[in-house]
Image 1 (cartoon, one colour):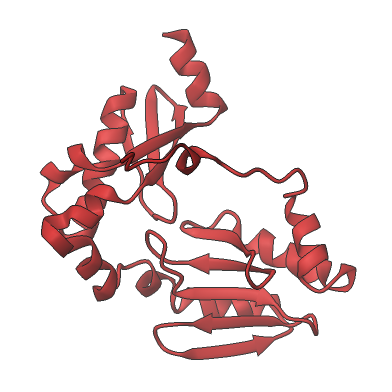
Image 2: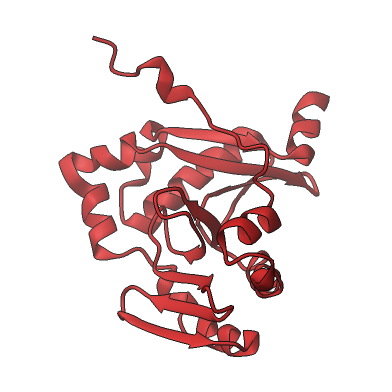
Length: 205
């Protein structure tokens, strides 16, 4: 029996996956768009934050957490207010002021970027087999003579003069974060996405 069916390689792409289109369509209509823009402006460049769209609930959210965890979750509610939720503290806040959102985030970001005991236990199961099996995509860029590789939802990056050095370093970085032996990095299910700068460098060599 084929353990990896062909359909597992299918990647769905939406022609209308623009941030503003998603927010306007599913985040409270055009009346809330200014709030979504302000939230995006605040979070897009902050390390570790990612924008997700839940198809089951048709809800866009900004999230912060390690390797799939969503510890801090922010969205604009139907009344156009910012709703901030901290899963670990089971605590939330609703405000109309983006500066208040920023202060709320700053008090929680560092802790939210640490892996939870639940995540560590899952990764450790069956002699770290879960960590070896879970697919992790690395984003790779190139600048100033070095490749830079980081995993989705991580706040650190790995650098190397070669693509292999950067990718292997990122795997080892994840192992150290989870508390796994760094040797496991070679067995991890890693894939990479090259940005324009990295692709240009690879093509030039």
